[in-house]
Image 1 (cartoon, helix red, strand yellow):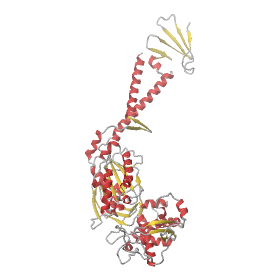
Image 2 (cartoon, rainbow, N blue to C red; image 1 turned 90 degrees about the vertical axis):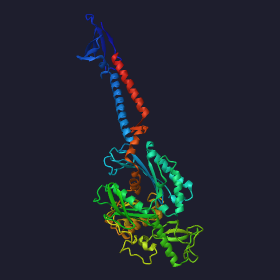
Image 3 (cartoon, helix red, strand yellow; image 1 turned 135 degrees about the vertical axis):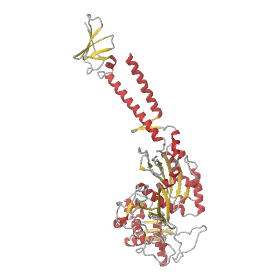
Image 4 (cartoon, rainbow, N blue to C red; image 1 turned 30 degrees about the vertical axis):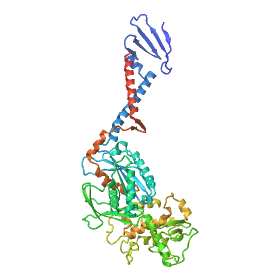
Length: 588
């Protein structure tokens, strides 16, 4: 009699098993009853008959009939999938993290402006086939390189405030402004590329205002700070750029992003108008041989470009508002009226472009102090080189018509020059002097323009009337309501003035129609042009090959998971051990 043997496997897999040895069968043949199915196999041969089919023992053991076999298969498949992904990412990691002739160079650009210091990191890649071809620009907030060949990644920007000109003879203040930016850049640029990454510190209008000796002191201190970084730097890369340089850097950045810098001069380009805190930069292509002070000629790609580029100091947003205060101060002194002082002994000026209820101190660097009778003390200086500025308190006294008139007056250059004849803005672009060429063509508005449009929720093609309508509506608010209606920032009180100012600047100061202008991207800055024209020229093709000698990247990314090199090696050893175990088990 055969004996009944209960399987250790669940009933769903084996209902019962009955092993019986036939006395008539001398070969040791055994009957196996599996549920209602039966199979017979011999004890010595290495195969069985399952459902009438000849199957090897090992395959039977690892067949899906056995739950142990199924889990072994699933686990082995999962581990081999991880092995495959690990190998793929090892290959892509070498390709992504090691520079080749198509990948990867980095540039670090400091933008030291009048209101703050910003840093930008750019990753370079050449197309590889044509030396004259320009790289491609791909925006990437994650900092991950794109897969296509030829690119320039723009990483997120970081900044510190205030401007470096506020830290004259304050070395600790300079370090507090620069060192956090450097540390941020060191995290963005891969460690293998630190020594080959060029860092440029380029200052603009904020430092242009200072005397040469003061500028030299600040730049020398900044240079010593940069020397502590792992990046490649030179003293000549730490400098103050001219207004013309800033202007055509912005033009290059704009047309590069708009894909207008092809290797043919016949393609029309866009003009760029960049509004900063202290100055205004205007650049456009003339299409013919330029002559004069503002003519700029340079090669980019394989094409020679002929530009007009100029910077107009005093027309940035912050300087323009100070000019409005100066005009009110002049008007007050000309009346020779009795000065009205606040409780803090500050001279009170009522401003038509400030909200009702606004009352704050204001430092006017170009306002002369007053005599007791209210007349300005022209020529009185402190022991240094600067005038003693009076203490002023601005009081909001909103009047929309007076505000527009005041904004238009700040644009008229003849009011800020030695000219005895006032310029008529209706007949000539009154923000320009007689030597500056009038803008022609289509223009993109950059930097300060973008932030004003975004503040008033304007479209990129908003008309002048739409800008004025938004500004008037905002000016009608009390200071309490206005300060609560928007995100706080250092110059929120000036937006009532800024709306009519940019309209007067574009329409009266530059004689541009609203159909000629479009708002550019808020991420677009002149630093991209500086990276293209300055840093890119420092990268020889064969230098990219040096990256092949660098060590492996520390981490490889698989989907949302990060595998370091040691983990990948351990995974491979586990799979190898498992494979040997399976092979040995099959031979038992």
